[in-house]
Length: 190
Image (cartoon, rainbow, N blue to C red; front, side, top):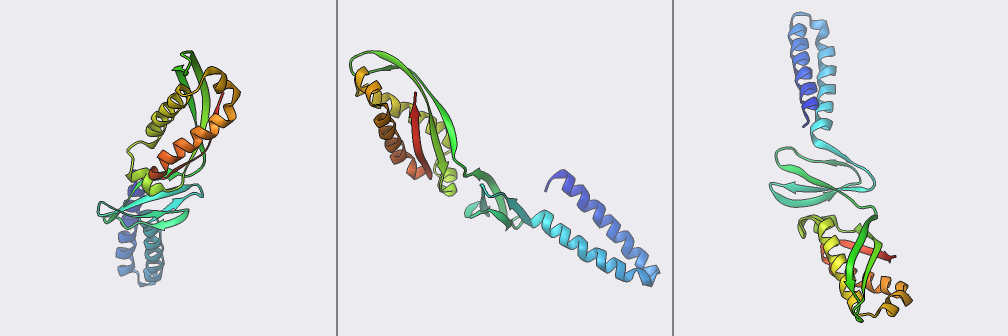
């Protein structure tokens, strides 16, 4: 509960207690007290129990410190004190720039390549629990895969078959990242 929500809750409770005490002395205010009490209970329920996830978000919910479920999209009920929203994961396709400098080809020529990798989280549970920082892990994996692929080719082969090299890299990276719950649809080297 955020500090703003906490103060709304406190002010609502104080107002409810004041209205209840007033309804004891003025019986006609009892029904107003009852309506406000029910409305306040509904507001408190939504503030403390309901989390909203956009179409592209998934929430990782832990119950008593252990993974319980993936929530979203839409509304999800999270029971305070027993469950917690560990983090929100964005499942849209993202892109990461590749900058590889000082790569040596099979014929001992030094080249520099730039490119972009497109990736998407397909299993938020694995992306959260199997690797600490999937962005950094993916970056390191891409750089080593690019270095290994270029080192096995000559300069002429690198520039003559750049499309084939992109497919080879995407397959190699996809093979490594599936256990992290990440799919790599394409790699584009320039």
